[in-house]
Length: 178
Image (cartoon, rainbow, N blue to C red; front, side):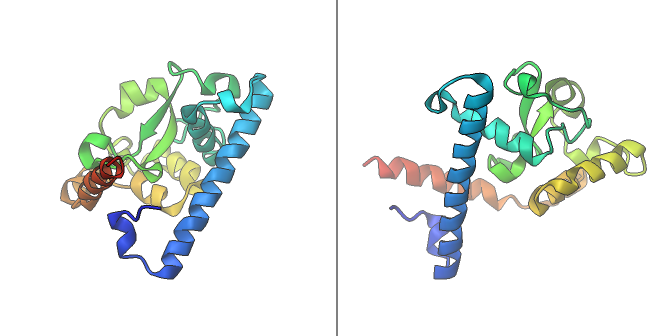
């Protein structure tokens, strides 16, 4: 096992927690592959990583688009014209490509309404749409909930340390090849 820069500062307890999270992710991916293969009639080995990822985001958001509330049927989940994997905070604004910055989204809403905006800037905070959004995201992990509430002003004042960490992770992956 190669220790990444982000791992060096971790205590033994934190490292154990990270290992447990990795095992949990592996188990979730296996469950996703089994579910998809059973429903779609394909071998679990033929389920792509993207499909497993979409499935996990779909289950996490209660099979709905968090923004619109529209139910996403399994038959539409793997159609890129209907459903997108969407960055909650636009990638171009924070360079965060992690699981905690992604959700499943109605493709039309993502491409025509959300665009390159923070979720907090889509709906007026006093509107019914904003209230409904806050209700729908209550099932998501706290980190994702915080991202959904960020406004454009908060985005502009946030120091995105993750940008540098992503660069370091990339360098570590490349170094592993040597």
